[in-house]
Image (cartoon, rainbow, N blue to C red; front, side, top):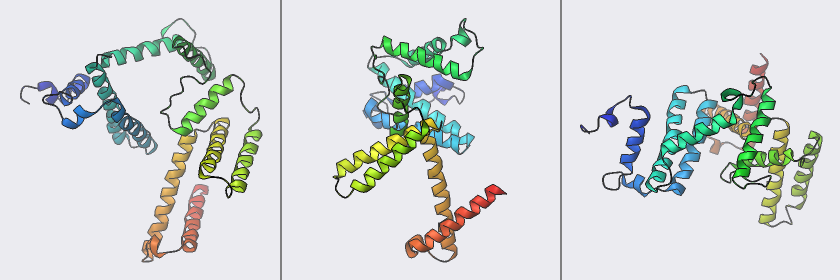
Length: 275
């Protein structure tokens, strides 16, 4: 390590991180686990780190966010190192490609176009540029290029947005609500006669329409569900705490008692919001 001042430099920045990654993947002296990885095995970690970034932001834990952004950056470095070893591209190629893309997509900042337009117009312009990029890649279908690896709810919304651009969309939000009621009714009525595969398909249909409702309401369904998950955890932990004060665990309680405690916790939260 005495011969590696860059690796020991706490202010080494990106060059230090890139060298650490190169050393980890060195076939002679690197880490056996890192050497064995490939794009497919690292991809799940990349997705997980992106979620942990979102989690730190929701918790407004800025120290944690710094670390999580570092973890996510390391995933990009890991993929770029494997690509460099395969002769595909380097980390600099990744950074330069991103820079070129941002300049091309922001002519109102880096070019001659005016900035005197609304955020909505800029969003439409952005989509026009992206559509041209997809055409250059021979992705001419309306739904081409929506990544398969996206979370299902997020991908559903992106697919719906693409379809809506060509007029395939409910014009009225009431129609979306009616469709949810229809799908829920079909599932409730037919669940006794359906196969498990058919039930799963009907349930997926209902989720897809619910995601569409979120889009019409300008709600991110992923963010809304994350918030509801956090609310459920908060309230259930409060129920557990009250049971503990009574000398009980949830396993020693019953649904009626826990429901009553849940309603009490929920009521107190609403009171606090109104004060």
